[in-house]
Image (cartoon, rainbow, N blue to C red; front, side, top):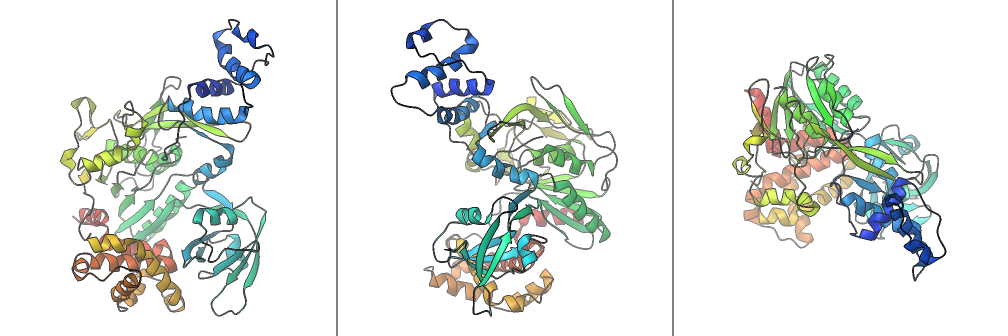
Length: 532
């Protein structure tokens, strides 16, 4: 399996620590000698690291915590390897694995902060909160008898209060519109699904759209459900959106790729120093092997996303549209430890069918590696495709005769620059207030909005509500004066974003994406491309 880790790790360059942790990984310890001078004896190379640990523990001037030394040292060891081999302490491992497993344990709500109050945006179908009757619009004021409203509690802490092991109970008190008294609930936590397919819907009578935000154990089933529903609605062309998808489980990407390729076509292969070449090929049982296909990628598409995009591009299946992907082509294997911690160790590289390694270089250090996107931005790569230069040594040819390049991400067949039209100084000032206004508007008009079950019908209603005027007054009340010139440039974008967020608050992503589509230039390009 291929695991993605997109966060930087803070490393401590402690040479002594490196030695200590390697001893732990090897798992061999020497008895601690009480006589310091005995440690000056010549020992075999394999004992040296363990001896250092024992010497420190026995003779260091101050008391030391052996476990703390090890926990500090292991990241320093992995820093010497590559940017994606990581150590995960026991306290963080369960949370790190949640997106890959496709579930977490909690009460099953999505929430936002409305004037420092926890507002339930939606309850997850089948989850414990929905079963007990919690509703969108409910405000959580108490958690386990602790007041949480008006306390300026950060989202992360709130999540920590509501999440917990399956079978445990959390008590909450909510304020519900129309109710004078607070309503108490005792919610037994349970497994809550994390959906990796954001949305699937028909753009028009023939073009379908599916957005995958990550590759997890549940992704393939979610994808197939969406694909079949769209085909039932007459889909003959598909837009598969992988923008912002930082990867996950390689097998899930392979399963999705299999739906588009013919029997025997190579999807991906991996190989490493201790890992012989391993290939994944299409089974010939795909359910969309011949329809028109477009795949959207951007600079945040990484790992398993690049496997999928690269497999389709190298087999001349569909068209890749957007901007060059991240360039993460290393395969991690999970290594669990008995204390509940774990390591993800890079064991191989993966290669697209033509033989491309899409891993970008990291020989110049991890700081430069993780700063690569900023460098791309500075060099103008997000605006002009000609700013990207590949050497001929990284040139490959597909069976259909198309030239593709390795050495750092997937280069799209059709480049779409980052959209900067409609961005004004006023927009940049008010951007953080757009969702806040949409949330407040939703709360003030929830009962009326609930009667609209289709995004198109809701949008028609919202278009008549002078939302932009209401928003400019809201922004002014928050210290941002109305800017007529800025509104000429950005008014349409602000208005569309407001409508999309309101629709999401009522209809979830099925309401959001069909409206947001109007200001998504890459998606609009893909739709026009398929219409030709």
